[in-house]
Length: 262
Ligand SMILES: [Zn+2]
Image (cartoon, rainbow, N blue to C red):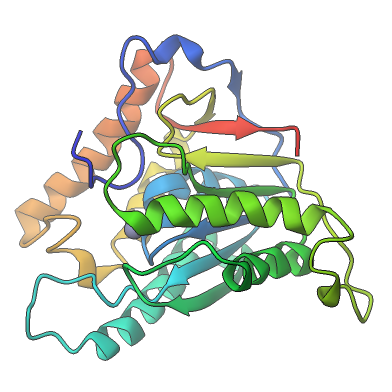
């Protein structure tokens, strides 16, 4: 696969058998943290849509402003960032319907996300305030990935989980009744060594519908420059998830590295 391809990577024969768990209990609250608008939909959209259809409240945090997400050299990048916020809100609504929760934008400059305490604290605060049972994000240990924001967003989330769960981290946040919070599980997408799968047959359509809310990304990310190419994109998403399932002898899945011991 391309070093830049977002979301769910194909399984190789050597990686397939490492899947040892399926289908977490549906969480009451989930929080997904992506580097850019659209990363969450690529990485775990079908899983979130499945859970939302069963009552889960789904929150989003987007770390950067997405202002580099175009091939148009003359683009107004401030306008693009605004447009991408609207697209992300629409995508969150399409994914989760009445169970769509908050969409928080940290507003960091696209391409320049840094692993530092202020941003980690913002994500930890989201975990403490929104109190998710499950958090989801980029796997920062994925090898040979080029895009720095995906790697950094993964580390920020892992570090924020640690900060959010322990009462002596970021103590200034723990005022007015706000308490530390330990999620039950962390799911990392794009994992080189996934060990968990979520069956998503019924929610692939919703994942694709949510991805299509990111119209500004049709050219650069989805290569959907006309109706035929958009149809091909839809088919690629489905084929990828079917292929992931076929590699482990089941129907379509999204795969993750699950960390239960938080
Ligand atoms: Zn991204």
